[in-house]
Length: 113
Image (cartoon, rainbow, N blue to C red; front, side, top):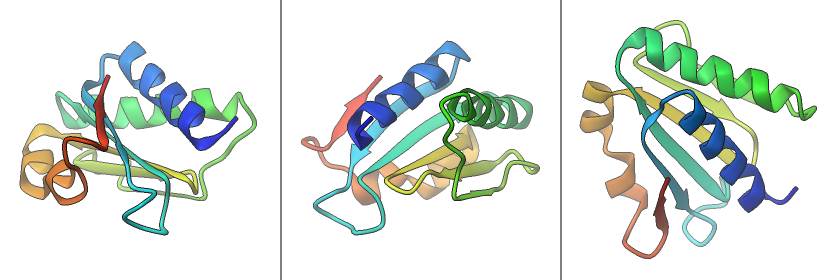
């Protein structure tokens, strides 16, 4: 599965668990860090933790483990790093503060799910 398909799968998983404002940002031409950022919101810290844990569980079924995971306990901003795809799940307040979409996105490289 290439990084585009993999990122689409993650977006579907987030949507299944009622993630909000899910976007995929293509950063291949902007950074060597990854191909895609996935950004989603949870309604609360509990929902944010639940979303990130669900993604991790479902992707683990495909035999893929994150290279790194951070922020899951706090539930304000959690990150799963899958190498070519990095998943960011925020609570609403933290997402508004960091505005990753504005830092990395433009009309041509952002796709909403």
